[in-house]
Length: 66
Image (cartoon, rainbow, N blue to C red; front, side):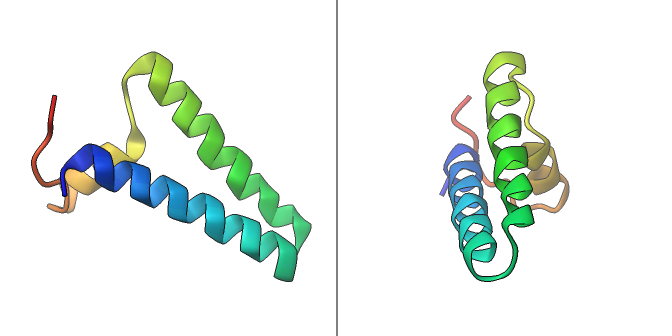
């Protein structure tokens, strides 16, 4: 799995997890959903993604399709 697909999978999992946590734990956890969405939006404009840097530094980045 290349880096961009991993980032999408992580973002999707974070959004779904935060929605479930908001339903079953506390609605305040919707801030996590907003945070992930805001990061996706800023990465679309700036072409910089924090998760990409984290995955590369931990050695989990894999191949890129850039």
